[in-house]
Length: 74
Image (cartoon, rainbow, N blue to C red):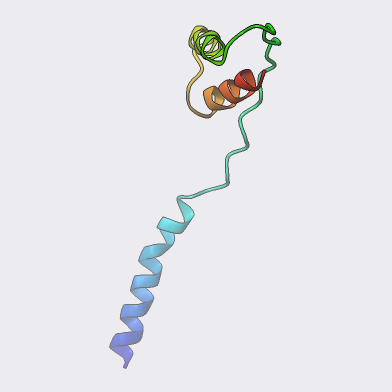
């Protein structure tokens, strides 16, 4: 019985660093203001413009996703 309790305690203690590695959640990426799109712009043109602007600003990861979402909404 003592062996089983000791094994359970060691297993529990060895798993603690895995829970601590998560840390605090990251705050959401700030939304970049986007200039309004021209009225006659197609979705494909808007995608090209937003993609080129995001590339020029060197946006990566969550920042790029947030920018592209806001840009494509117009």
